[in-house]
Image (tube, rainbow, N blue to C red; front, side, top):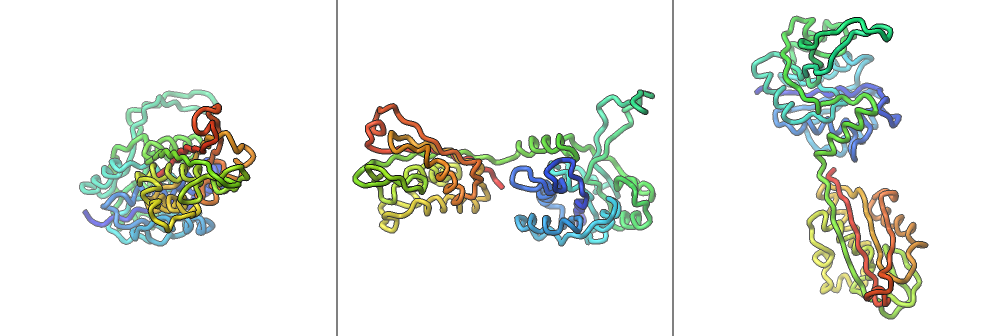
Length: 381
């Protein structure tokens, strides 16, 4: 197979999908729609180059986004024109391969099997495009009045990518009516025969808020979501304060331990290690090592957060329950959430810290110690 450039058309200003920014920069999960689209094309080994066509006003948005994409297939972006066709032509002029795939930036759900089909289609055709036969009944309607039924057996709806020989589509665009709504129309007007290739309902184009919600469901099915649990106990001994989630609280005793004995932060840290399948605090910071004597527990938590980043995960949610008779946790819960948020970079609204008692039963009920359990939810970036 000869070389292929994927041209992603992302110069539109549409905001109907909400959020007040161009839809291609609205996020699904932790990634903008356009990043999902780029990564769906980067995943195919036959694609040797990707050129994004963006609006000049979106340059900063785009450059901030692509710092998270480390792939030399991604070329410098080009600026689009006043119409979609003008923008596509700018992308075509920047392409350097034998073939081009022209794809909408607002189609982030392109599956690899559909991409395979369109690329395979180029082996026997100069041009091809993804399309789906229409399943719904069609009516011609004028001024809210039904005029006639339209036979659907010959009606297909076009999708992207649409694939062409570079030299042929360049010449077609050079002499084209730039008001065309897709590339097949321009190719047809230039006498290029274009073969339809079966697309997929999953390959939606995001236009409205409902489309955005559907894309979240589709992409959510492919997310790598991890949940980890942590549990820790420390005894109470002589002292005048306890440290819980980094907050010092006056008390008649202190928590005993090799480090600062922050039982709550230890539970959160272990929950993160668990979600990553990376053991526990004892393995990373063994109590036999004097280096960690009286160490602040935020060191341990920061290490877990760093591992998340190295493994390409982000922490989506943290839930921590502190089990004790005293001290009362409620007055300090907000400060604890804020401190954990600072350390983990998790939005404070996604952090829950609460307390319960054991109704004076067991070692916590007798004020002999404090226990904590935590759950951390991680999602691959």
